[in-house]
Length: 333
Image (tube, rainbow, N blue to C red; front, side, top):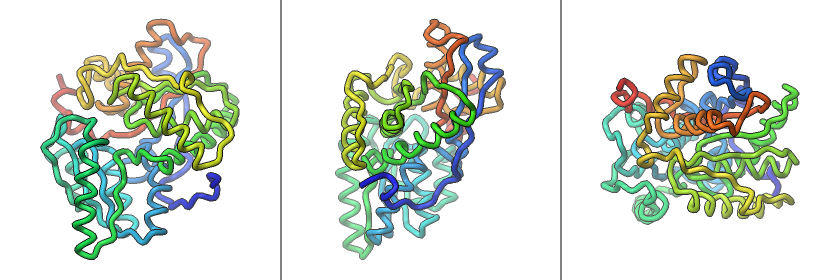
């Protein structure tokens, strides 16, 4: 089935802004840096998962689903977006979140209170369990809800599925059109690599548009080999779903895990510095889990000479701003 034939529900405001960060570029003495503002996508406080949910939840509507179940860390941006989308579509949201760095009722957890999300914090601390142990618990909950007369649907953490990844194949066309309008050739696109679907869809979309743009993922969750495996699988499965001619081979995926630090949700000093720098120079707020680490990676690569003043780099702001309030102690240190 082609991308245009896939059912899609309207959840975001498109296109999101794409513009140059001139002050940041000047302060770093490096490439021309552009930003894609997925944090302004219009669903709740925005974020990259909105594009995935437009396809995933269209299928849910087709199937008569009235209850959505997903997982994530306690401050999960995706869980918040899915809960907000559920409310928009008249569905109930159940969130089985694992114990994160900040479990206080602040940031995204505070917003869940406002939304009326049904949140369960599981005594699980390994982020990898969101994709292994937790799915079993979500299906158990789905069976219980079905026995009560509900029609539930389990959505993988991060909407990691070919249908969700298709949302970012579509986004590649939007970015392509914006760059053509600006008459800009983009050498590299940098973004945080978490569950991997956003990077997989974007790289696959660019490949099918014939755009020679490197898509570099800065890992915030997994070590490089594991992230590459997910990208490869998602790329092949999504290409199969959409009937795409071009694919991305294993050796063409680009991931760096040098900026992961002590682990998922644990900001590094460089991450916090990047958040402060971008806020001061561009009035744009990054987050301490995803975009802060991705920007720290980009800044380090500029300082190491990988990107020069002759290059153009696009940074994808994937959202997560609300998490800053939960991480107030780290950001004040």
